Image 1: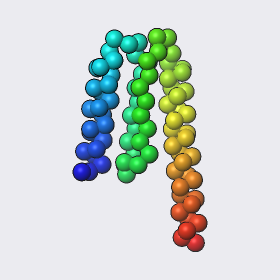
Image 2 (image 1 turned 45 degrees about the vertical axis):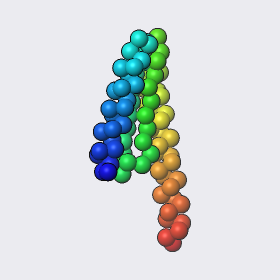
Image 3 (image 1 turned 180 degrees about the vertical axis):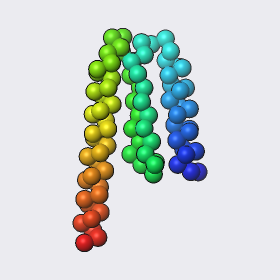
Image 4 (image 1 turned 60 degrees about the vertical axis):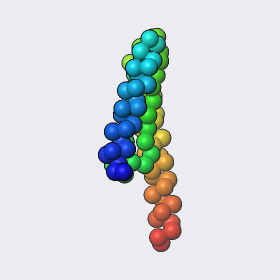
Amino acid sequence: MTVAEDAAKLFRAMADRIERNSSEAFGGAMLAVPPNGEGIVEMLIFDSTENLGQFWGLVQSRAQLAIRDQDEQSRRMRGFAG
């Protein structure tokens, strides 16, 4: 199965979760699939306050963690190569 096919399944699964919980207060959803399919980031939030700042702060934090993890992995791989 390709990364694109796997990603499509993840997006359908996220849509299903949103639908199953449609009676809850929707606080946002995010699914990020990198080109290689590794380090996927997903979140589904139920929050009655619908706080946009909190949502985007969570997205930013998750992205920063993914960047940090990728940087650490790259440093480790350079260590093995050199």
